Image 1 (cartoon, rainbow, N blue to C red):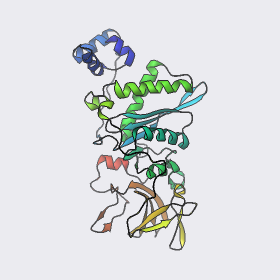
Image 2: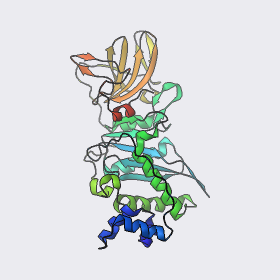
Image 3: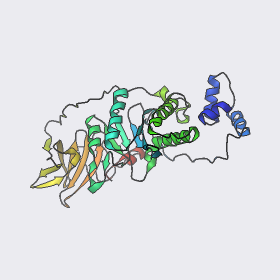
Image 4: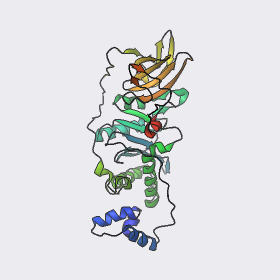
Length: 337
């Protein structure tokens, strides 16, 4: 018990699983008392449970992605990037980045897609790597590349990290492991350290939210393969389709409307509703234009999930506002900002 506690830093419930696998069946209370007697458990407070939880039904339905702050090392700075499967909590990606930029993140995503396939959707915060907040731009070139892989994008509410609770909890576990084992002092040392943590987290560490299974017990790679050259998108027959100019503007009704610089020269679908124009790129709604006020804003949500816009009885309803049947998960992943 003491050796396992010192090696992993886990509590009695997780250690009980390992001990049973070694042929030693002991109650959790007994393990806890032994650890406390050896001074390995302090006066720890309890963390209240989240009021509402969600979990996708199968692997690769949703991945959560986020960066873990920054760690100063002798030869620069390390920015860990985490990519977590929502259903299984399996860490499909954990990378030490020298700079937290869209180019660095993209390279890691390509590696992950090539190894595990492509998810149906991804949940992220409003990091500048995948969301541009300047002048309400919305998508970055990295976000567009994800869309072109057929991925539906969801962005958490601003200043609401609970939306990405699983990857946030993953980062807490990572921070605890780094503190216990010692922080790597160079960027080169971070790679092996994160690989070791990822292997232990996925295959060794029992997870209470999974009924003490390991993430590897519930995960399987996606059958959807990464496409280095995505095929051209075909909009439904009869759609009004327009091409944006080289600056990402739409020429429409005698004037230019800003859509997204990241979508420059791409074809978008145009739909009309209640004095507004709703634009979609491939399977994602990306922009709303209010013709009366002449204001445009990003409204990023997938068409197939009807995030705020619905088609029933031949009527396309405005995305301005949440649908009445929105679940907590849908509210948290809804955007505009």
